[in-house]
Image (cartoon, rainbow, N blue to C red; front, side):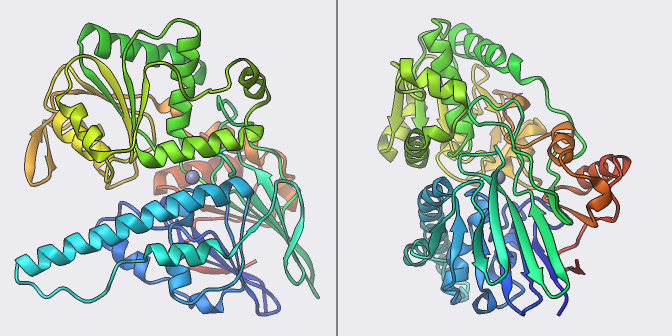
Length: 470
Ligand SMILES: [Zn+2]
């Protein structure tokens, strides 16, 4: 049986990362098990149909903890998967809180939908939530920890090495060697590639020569702004919105990664005595838990940050920061007077406490929303970035009077030059196939052109469900 890869997600889109390897001996290895997000009603249908039998999978190898890479693990388990789930130790810890949070959302959304259907006299299909907290508990027992740079046999003849991808804490590129009668095939899956200018995480590391490369392409046709300017830019926004206008600076941020990066930067400005005295609210239990995991794995952060830790043992907290767990306290922020900073999830603004901050905050011209991350197509964040006059929320047309600001330099994804740098460790003449995933069409086309210029051949842009012999 020839070695093949079938793309079951993040194929010509950015979410649902799921790539299935059919190995020469008949075993099956799944790379990532991500949830589809922001595809509207199509998301639920995509999330409920894997396109393969979960019980037929022999091993799952996870690149990192983001939900669009890990979010369907509990569903896989609910449908009978009981094999090992390989992950780095930090990825495992982050999955524990992210998947529990996701299950909570699934259960809540389902209850809400069922109630609404009943009210409207509609028959609600008895489908149940996508998964439950019980499925998460079962999934967590299946995790097997693999540190960076240590080759481990995950199936007979298949060796896995994790290489730091510098994208979020614990994130990795996956390098597999598959031995068969035909010889050894080396397959690298980028996962999500981070920045070479990240303030917290080390640079993405070079990987061993591969025959086949599956590469993300989120920003395959774009350059990010210089990151060094971002502290100054952030300070400028705080000064203008919170001090001069006495408004709220509302920052939608992923609980993992972006929140810690902003907190680190604010802490740094505080230590330098440059941060105005403005209350900072981190309004997300999940972000608080994630920050705890960043503290626990501070050995994975950049060397100069580990040095900084000796002077300031808490890089994510300073006087003036309040970490909010209670929902009642979260709601109080909406009636609070004076300038403040609120950091809340979710980053793409489709869920979480950020929703009520936007609902109340968007109407006031003194306020501003600072978008610091990628907002996928079809998300609320993407609509808001088009700066409409009004935006639909909770059955109301909410006037958008607040300024919509962006700081793209906070992106956790490599831009096109960084993706070139990431792949520059390879001899293109030895790479037989490159598959571009996790990007919009224009981004993948852009990256295909760049990689082709560098001498890479057979660069494919797979479609959902498409299978390739490699
Ligand atoms: Zn990611």
